[in-house]
Length: 347
Ligand code: SF4
Image: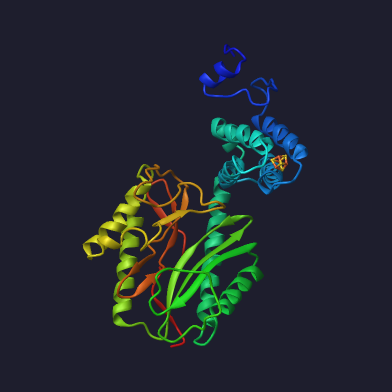
């Protein structure tokens, strides 16, 4: 309040003059009302030429309204912050940024007030439902996959199944081969006996995502494949075991890397043999970000993310292996009912 209303003095205080408009609100004004007024104004003013602004302003209004009706979860706040981040710098003019900056700032600075209107338990319940659906879609893949089927046909089968069960979407990465370097988009290549099918299923319900990662052998897996896959599962379990409030994301990646290093795969603990050891769930892969050795984000209760050691091993090719988890008050809860194992189809 004591800062001169000028570009330089406001910049020095860590803020900006923006469009020059002033909104005065006292402590009795709910911050949600302020945010809605701002977002509605920019939605109305958007000319619609560029997608981040056209869609982002509309999504933001809808998400704020969801908070107002008591239907939002903490994940919605993360989603809204992510939408704002994706608007900034991606529009043709500054109108989109002009909405995203104050809304992002409101989420950051008034998080406690907004959190009071969200339902954390609903977030967890949603995550559990989504994970159960991801597992059901994987079971369906095991039931229908067979040698001779094209990758793209198998992917369509699984996606349609997920949608028939109510998913808005299923971001499915699925490819097969005898010694894959990584997972790629499904194409018209027929799946052959002796291949490993790698499938990362990510169904979305109400705009939120859950993910499981699995590899499946077409025909019985070799002893070597089974042994190497078991190693990856062991590494994943070591990573999950260190999860608790106060631990860092990097602790998870380091625990996974330690198992792989001990087994002689230190060289393979980095790109191009892998991308990351997991990531946040929800639109935009949000909190706590990527599970990687350089992410020192501190874990908090109710964070939901997937731990997936997914990587290439020279003897067997690329394996997918991942489970979604939730940070609890005392440690971690695995949200999937099954553990990844090297399944087999067409045996
Ligand atoms: S950022 Fe500007 S150009 Fe793009 S849709 Fe919004 S108002 Fe139009």
